[in-house]
Image (cartoon, rainbow, N blue to C red):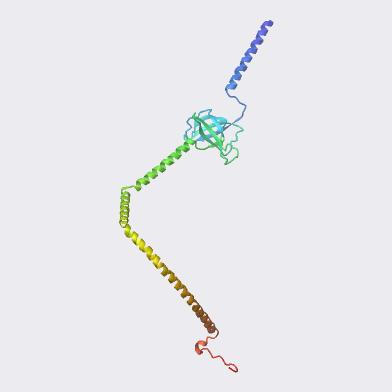
Length: 265
């Protein structure tokens, strides 16, 4: 009897140990964690090719969660809905932006979160929303594609402008202008000696005329020096006459009266 009881106890212990080992393996393989998570929605307007369920979500390069679901928006098929599971202590704010990114040469896609610093208020679900919605920004590939598109458009416009500029009429006008310039240059080259002589004569005339200009300036200075005192005297006399007429207007009719002589004069 005792032997049977011992075998039973050993069997129960072995079964219990095996069950514990199996549960431990399942726990470790499933990545079970005591961290708490919060669900967020992201609406992407670009292709999410390469992104899959359980893809990593990083915040400033640190893994903070994963993608739980990927599906098209029922109302707008151009939008892709992503459901993210992010650690609860991750500082998701109103200024947090989600961007699709790729890891180096491996090409593994992941979702990168970054706080733009525009609004540090915690992100919460708005009325009518089941989960808070994280805003998105274009990925690097989308930005490159847009830049290349704009560059191509600018090159096309420049090409059109050049083509318009170089039409037959403008080319003819440019050709005629070049011919005229060549003719003028040839004429100047053929008459270079005469042009040099004219320039030389002009320079000599200027040097000869310089003393005359200087003499004229000296004469004007002397004339002004001699004339200004006379002009000043005339102005003074006119001022005296004006004052006398203002005091005695009858002077214009009777003339200026002779001053009465004093005794002994």
